Length: 431
Ligand code: UD1
Image (tube, rainbow, N blue to C red; front, side, top):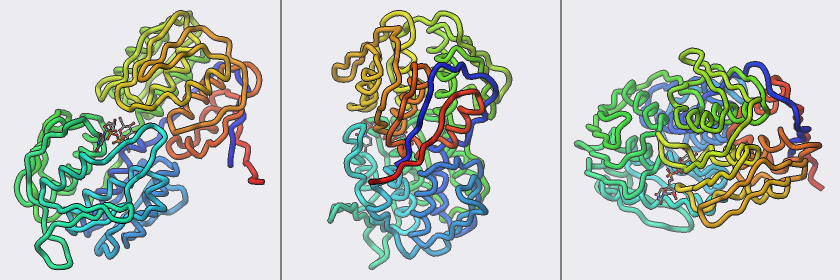
């Protein structure tokens, strides 16, 4: 297993270009299942989750064409989907495989998708996806660890989903995306209430509309979808990754550096920018796609609570915790989205951080002198938090299990090195 080796203490300087958003690219690729025509998706980040999504679509008999591997441009054609199944082997490595359920049900009226199973950051059920599909006429059974869904009424093939009025009990990002995609081809109108308003949901709406979908309510909690007979091919470029952007904003602030972050979308960063400015970091919007962060001055504690968009993203919580270990004063970090998302705290404590965790709250006393240690990445964003801690720790930090970070950060080692960080990937051997 690969590891990262970081020798901390270098201020990051220079320019870093942000890749496409993993969480936009995943639903965009799944959306290609909604049509028999050719769909080209651009600005795909070169990360493992997208390779997994490509494999998943191929498994279903979609033709997935790339000119290099990993690729940032994908062409997907799904004239016939002979295998409406997401197998456990792929789903277990990527929970977002569930995003194929909505498109398969819309297009074929039948699907078999493995249950995602345990997840490091909490139970993460998919009950809201399933109850919404049931409201749209699907019959759902669990068998051998798989979700078996079918719309009755067309023999062995499935029937057509029906429009419905659905109020999500809880705000769910992939749940909103799944049901949105399902509704595009349903009979009649679907109204979705209490929807996620994340920019990735809006990006999916933009793409679906280009495919001929009739959707109103972008960026609000209520979406109205009028089902159409069929969707057609399109070309779409996904939005920049706001979590990668936020991670580099923290990297600039925590190392006392001066980083220019290009190819990003500053308006998606409002909550992170406001919070970092509260700690004393200097962040300016250079232009519509560029931000500049400067650390160096005194940073002070600021409490932070994760929230759904437009609030502070849970996917930035571990990175913010790394920063909180370095500021003057006590920061209270409250995680409201996932019940078990502080696994990085114990690793940061091993590096010398002063953090106490109680339930969904973490209290971080700073500044702490971090010392390089061997730590384990437990999930994608926790790994990013540990990398940031390693950048300011004295001596050498070894981060184990970096396959987590490879799921979602394109070329993080190369990007950090280009900005002056002393970080390298060490290819591990299994004994
Ligand atoms: C998505 C993001 C992930 C991010 C998360 C929250 C993708 C591919 N992943 O994950 O990076 O951390 O949003 O911003 O876009 N819930 C239920 N029942 C359900 C669905 C969700 O109880 O059927 C709960 C979850 O356990 C969690 C909360 O709702 O507590 C939010 O989860 P959700 O928004 O669904 O997260 P994902 O879509 O899986």
